[in-house]
Image (tube, rainbow, N blue to C red; front, side, top):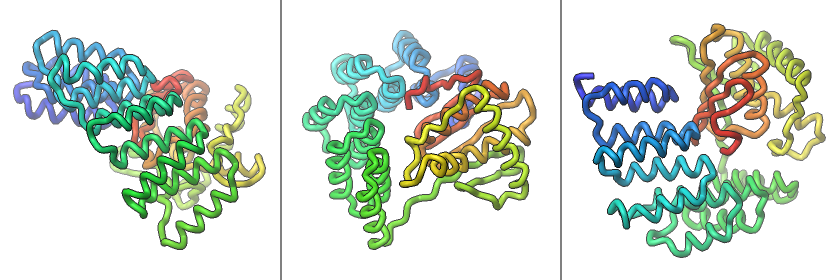
Length: 341
C-alpha cells in the first residue's frame, strides 16, 4: 500500500463494515502505521467483542514505540466494556495518565460507567461518577439508564432518567429507556403514564428498522412490515425458520416484549421484529456460502439475538448484524459478543 492516507481510509472502511479480517490483513501490509491506523484496528476488534485481539494489538502498538492517544484508550476501554472485564478496564483507565500521559476525558469515563453498569455494579458506578474530574453528560446517564433496564433496577433507572431529562426535557431516549425499564418490571401503569406524557409533549419514539443490502438493492423493514415486494415469500420463510428452531428447542424470550399482552401475543409481536424480517429475506436472496449482513438502527433485542444464533447453526449460515453499539457475528450457533452486549 503505497499511500498511507489511502490505506488508512480503506482500514476505516473495512472496520465500519465489520470486515475485521480484511482490516487486519491490510493493516499488516501497510509500510507505515500511524496512530490512527492502530486505533482503527483496536476499535474494530472492540466492536466485535474481540478483547484479546484488541489488547494484543495495543501491546504491539506500545512495543514498537507508537504512543497511544485519547482515541486509543477509548477503543481499548470499549473493548473491556464489551467483554465485561472490569479489572482490566479500571487498570487501563488508571494507567492512562500515570503511564502514558493521556488525561482521561468524558468518553473514557462513559466506558467505565458502561462497564460497571453492564455487570450491575451500580454502587461502584455511582461512586465513579461522583469522583469524575469531568462533569457527567448525557452519555453517562444514558449508559446507566440502559444498564438499569438490563438488570431491572428501578431505583438507578429513575435517577439516571431524571438526570437525563434535566439536561434535555425532550430527550426521547430517556423516555423510551425508562418506559422499557418499567415494562421489564411489569409496571404497565407507569408505562402507560409515560407514553401518555410523550404524546402530550408531542414526542415520538423512533421506530425500529433493519435493512439488508445486496449489490445495488437496499431492502428496509419495519416491525410487522408487509410492504416488501416479496413479503409473501419472506413470511413463508419466517414460518419455516420458526418450525426448524422449535425442533432444536427454541423458546421465545418474551422479556423483550414491551406491551402488556398474553404470552402468545408477545411471541407473535417478537416474531415480526424488523431484524427477523431482514434475516428471512437474507436467507432467501443471499447465496449459500456468502455472509448475510444486516443493519439495525436500534439495539438488537434478546429474542432476536437468540434467533440469529440458532439460525446460524440450523441453516449453516454466517450472519453479521450491526446495531448502533456493535457488530454481532453469528456462526455455528455462537455470537462474537459471547452473549454479553
